[in-house]
Length: 175
Image (cartoon, rainbow, N blue to C red; front, top):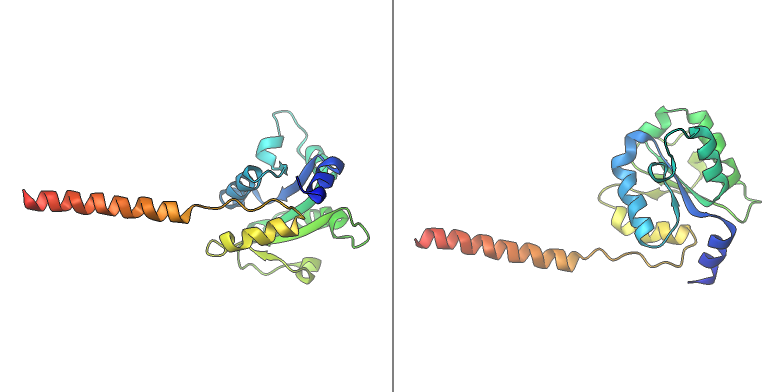
């Protein structure tokens, strides 16, 4: 394991905390799974919250135990308790706190509100998220290499399926 990643893991229980609106689960869940597959310890509420837990207390604990805060910004997030959300990011945005990182992840084209507009963000739109994933890993300070989505294998499967489909169609036409 790379030294920086190893140090991050020794200091904090989680490599990153995924802060998001519950309305953005369809976008955030695959990201959380991919990050975990790539070896990062991710605080994701579906994995960490159990029945009977105090949600605010567990979120606060998760933030305290995380090195990186990935704030998933969207119209849904901006429409929720925004002031509380923004104030919760302060410990990660403090330039004097070198141990922690703050990474805004923009899920849609909603205008960025408040003091967050000053931060460079990663654009996580459907057509760009595969290219942006390496940036996210780098911004997290991880030495983990991004999982390679097997586009070549997928393309080979698609081509074989087309051949079978054509063969099937040709067979039907030949009969």
